Each structure stands twice: as structure tokens, then as C-alpha cells.
Length: 153
Image 1: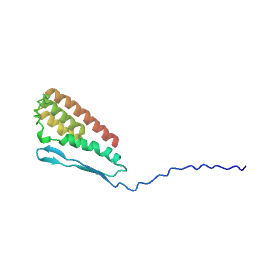
Image 2: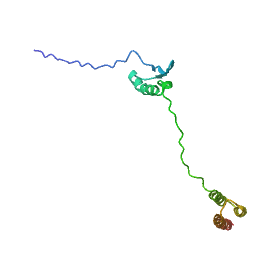
Image 3: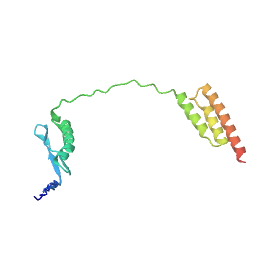
Image 4: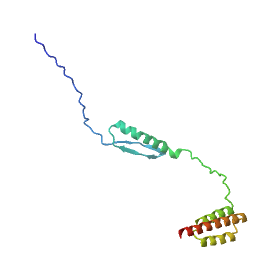
């Protein structure tokens, strides 16, 4: 007796390429915005499958539908302006003090500081206490500039 060899043939599944290739997929929808008034948005995408395209397009179309559907028929909401209490502006003396201090801090020469000091003394917006405080700041700044001049020499 002869042994017959039995060979089993295994079939390997072959991937079949689709005969049709999708180039683009579009969805167009008519949204009624009022009586005899419509818009027709259309979204066109390139996708591998219609399911992928639909997953991308559907949320955008839903948003457009919610935003524009029967917009002219919706009740108009009247928005009343709300009046809020605001803090009163700072007194003029505080604003003048800040500006004067800024000028003193940015002065680059003793001559400039002397001019600023004259303006501070003549100011009608500054209170006496502020003028005294600024005079002390000017004196300190003059000393700083003079010390810088000595160090540069």
C-alpha cells in the first residue's frame, strides 16, 4: 500500500481593491429660516468612506441647523442694559501725585529735577502733604544723580 500524501490547501484571503474610489462626499441641506426664506449650506469633504465623511460633516450641519432654523420666527429677546456702580475716580491730588512722582523718577539730570520741583511747588492740584513728600523724593533723586556723576568720573 502506498501512502497517499494529503496536502491541504490553505486559501489566503486576498484584499480586493474597490472598483470605485471616492473623490469627495457632500451633504447639502435646506434650512428654513422664515416664511419663503431658506439657506442651503453645503459641505464637501474628501474622505476614505462615506461613514468617515458623515462623522465629520454631521456636527457642522447640526450646528448650522440650530443657529438658523426659523430664525425670523423666533421671539426677539430684548436686552436691557444693566447699570453697574463704578468706583468714583481718584481725587485730582492723587492723580497729580502719581504724575509728579513719575516725572521725578524718570528725570535724568539735576536741572530737570529743579524744573519739576518748581512745577510741584506751583501746582494747585497737589495737597501740601503731597508737596512735602515729593520734595523729599526730589532731594533723594538729586543725590542719586550726583553720586552717579561722581562714580562716572
